[in-house]
Structure formats: structure tokens, C-alpha cells
Length: 246
Image 1 (cartoon, rainbow, N blue to C red):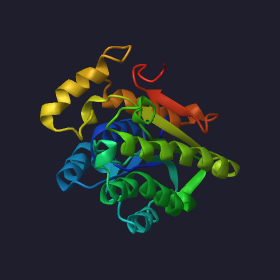
Image 2 (image 1 turned 120 degrees about the vertical axis):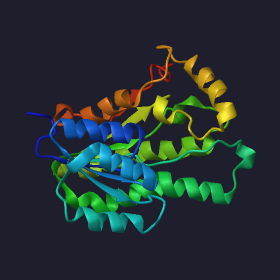
Image 3 (image 1 turned 90 degrees about the vertical axis):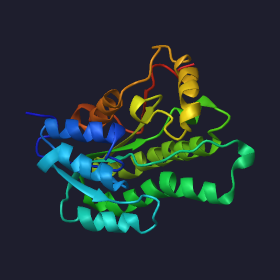
């Protein structure tokens, strides 16, 4: 018996990185997955890699109508036993460089997106289901150039705490994954020439002395999505090699 036998889990932003690693493992443990993403090539590659256990859907979390469209697709496949709200993006900018357009774009994808997704998908969550939101260690790092991204990921933590209270009467748990430097999407928003130096700067602050893997982050998300975490809600789980423990 696998942890996800007979269960269906929706993973937004699941066509690459942590989301894809998690989707693969859910299938290997007996589950079915619904995966969303934006990049057509990645979506096609994910469908090939995941096989018949996966339904792959193009969906843009930043689009205010996307949650309605996603709910229409999920209606054919519910109930959902797990919902991993993982889709997001990041850019770097000094505080003086942030304008209304960049603010609106990142808030739309990283905050409004999961907020509307939960609003539309809540009715499809089975009793005892689990919701996981992906935040970021950037929320706690205090890095000079990540104020906007960190703000969006701090909002995710606040949302999850309220949802944990709101959904508890249905036996639905809500928790937050807080990944640090993860290899597959590690500071992917940086230009190539700046990435290696910044990565080394971050890794030098990690007590374990290395970046994590997508599989390591996904393993913690899957713990939270599974019945192994049946008495865990309203919590944050850092997967960061000790980066933010100080």
C-alpha cells in the first residue's frame, strides 16, 4: 500500500522543479496527479515523464479567470485529497526599482493566484484532505533585493494560517513548505552571469554547506500532503539546510 493509493493530488506549478519531483513520487506511491504549468514544452515533457497517472493542464495563476478555468477541469476529476499550491515566480530588484507594474505582476501570480485557487477549489477538497502552500526562505532572509518576492511569500504564510482555521471543521489541514536554496530552481530569476556568485553567497550561509534538491523539498511537501501528517496543521516546514534557523 502506497501513501497515496486511491488519492488525487493537484500540484500547481508542477511541470518542473519541486512540483514535478513531487508529482512523480505521488504516482510512484499509488496516486493520481493533476499538474498545472505555463510552458508548453515543459508541460509536454511532464506528461511524457509522468505518464497515464497524470492530467497535465496549462493554467496561468496570474490570470484572474484562471482559477475558474481550473475548477472546471477539476470538477471532472474530484474529489481532491491533496492540493499543493506551488506556482510562483520571482525577480530581483532594489526597493527603489519596484514600480506598480512589477508589484501587480508578482502579487497576481504569487498571492492572488493561490488565494483564488483555494476559493474555487475548496468545494472539491475531500474531508481530511491536505493543502500545502509553497513559501520561501526569502521571507526570513532579509536580502536587500528580494523585498517584493519576500512580501508575496510572507503573504502566503499568513493565508495558510487563516485557512488552517477556516478549513479545520472539515478535517482539512493546511501547512506551508519553506524551501531555501533548491538546485532546480535555485535563484532562477537571476541573470546567468550573476547566478553563480549569488548561489555561492547563499550556500556559504547554509549550515549543511550545499543547496538542496527538488526531491528533498518534495519529500517534505508529500509528508504534509499525506496521512503521515494527520495531526499537523497551521505549521511551517523549512527545507533549507538550516539557512533561516538563526
